[in-house]
Image 1 (cartoon, rainbow, N blue to C red):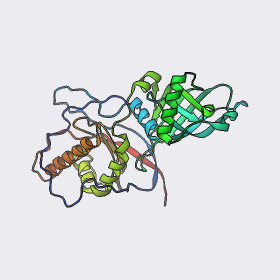
Image 2: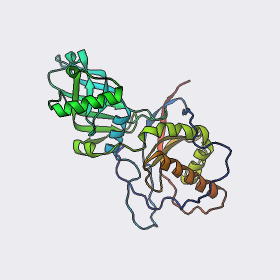
Image 3: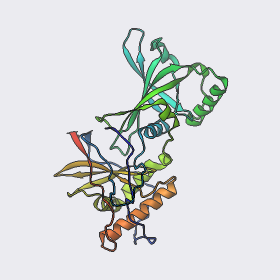
Image 4: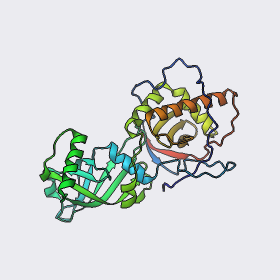
Amino acid sequence: MHLQAQTLTNQFAPFVAPLKPTSKSRFASLNACRFRKISYRALTCSVSTICESAPTELRNVKPLPAEVSRTIMELSSVGTLSSLTQEGWPLGIGVRFAVDQDGTPLLSLNESLRELSIDRRSSLHVQLEQCGLRTPQCTIQGSLGKPDNKMILKQLHTTWKKRFGEEINEDILYIVTVDRVLQIDDFGEVGVWVNSSDYKTASPDPLRNFAERLVDEINTNNAEDVHRFCNIYADLNFQFAEAKLIWVDRLGFDLRVFSPQKGTFEFRIPFPSEVTDEKGAKSMFNGMSQQAWEVERNFQALDFERVKQLKMIKPLHSVE
């Protein structure tokens, strides 16, 4: 699946200030997020729509692959470093890593380095599980080496201590210079190559540090709102039994629905405008929930374009 910049114009109508009555505490801190116990493979993908009647206004409705890769690297701390042994065999080693301000990984390799080839060409594969439903991943290709600048080395010490709360021995500290990155949305999907410049200049998502918690809270305490989002903001044309929020970022959120008759589908609902912090994300969800509630009860006309194109997720096998 090739992720490209997508467009949205006036996706949603203006919000109404007062929120609908509710007895539930909105976005309380709980921890629960699971779906059907199935392994999945993606078949096709298209996750947004364009409102053709409004004036042209271009903006991304989904983070670009370079941004997704930077977010994955920021949120993860373990990965698999792979290279060729001196005998020519590929070897993968589990490593801890941190990243500097440009997304360059720094590793603690210790004795495992002895098993790697003199040829320092390597790859670092990193995965990020989202709500137990999707696993975006990126693979960094580059050269494994030692930092040779004293100032950079000092900065790397600080980066490592900030991530792990401990000092690192300079003798076992290595970096992977980034040549290019392969970003993949989930298992079984086709990836997108990102060049070194785009990766280094991209910014990780500003919602990344609380996205998982927010998703858990909404799925646990606001299940009715999640179902209403699916019914109002998406044109599903079928009944579904389950709906879950998968992930949220500055530009919108991803949902997955299950229908016993049709199967499992994933789609994206963009935010009307970009958010930059937790407060803004919660406010946006509340406003969209209010609007969906009013449309559902015919207090407000449905005068916006609904998401029509979905990604079908095919189950490989069921897990009892």
